[in-house]
Image (tube, rainbow, N blue to C red):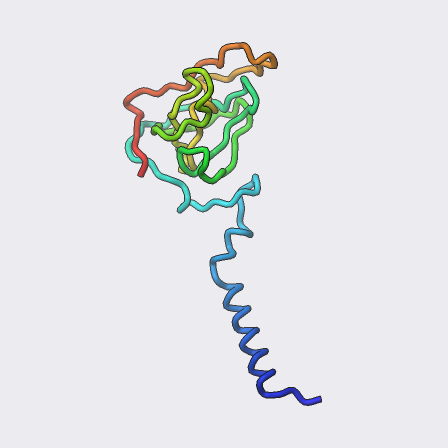
Length: 159
């Protein structure tokens, strides 16, 4: 059985288009993800101008959900870019105002402050961190712990 010239040309074009599509960057992010399975690139992460020298905060372990999420921007609707487990030491280098992560929490845990990670990997919410390690409260009635510091000298602006 002889193959027609049209079939041969169509096959060659199909193979070329497949190779070109496989080599293009549109699909790359689906195969390169962060450890939690979310995809993010450094270009997705919102930067900060201003801020201060790096300082230490801790992912909260007081109430569920324990730990804290890393977001690309100071907003819970931005891309999840990983997380820190409870009481993990986190290096931050300033803070900015953004959308409150838990607006119905009691003050100060309803704050719109977001801390910028020193390594540039994103931001963590005020409600998700503490100044010192905490212990879990199964009753949900204990105070939230010591809030992370928000000195005016560390305030930055979203780039």
